[in-house]
Image (tube, rainbow, N blue to C red; front, side, top):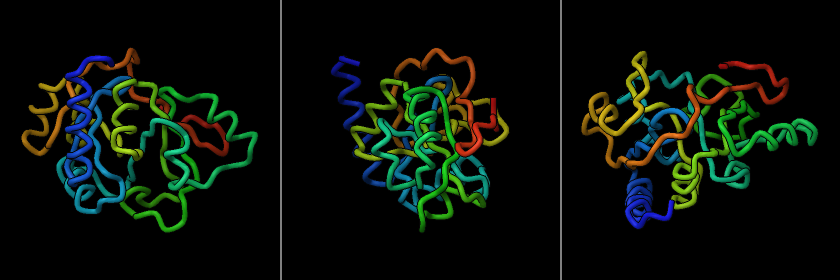
Length: 188
């Protein structure tokens, strides 16, 4: 992560984030597609580009737990210790959504999917944006997730404003999703 090129690209991605653009970036297993979670226009474009129903909701990734606090209601301390111990890493948890979150984040759910990413570039992107970012796979719904910048362009074309070229993490599949209250695996 010491490459000047990566640092330059992260600054460019942060400008893109702040101006409402869509960013493709490497995660633990696949390329993610993200934007400012509170920018309605960005979210509408992301969902349209992916052909993803708004009712499904999205995942937010963060550089650390502090970035997620405005978006969630924590569970009891014992449950939160289990959750925090799994981070950073490829573990997404469904936690109670904060009051008044936009519908496009949670969809029809009362929970929000959140993760403190273990991927150094994705975490650096969250720090550069000073915010958690939306993290949905960079592909059209029903298609295989992109695993490199070329696949991002082939599937999503010029709809993506900024692509960060960096290696994926070592996970063979996207993050595990668990219910925060029970620990039950929703997606393995």
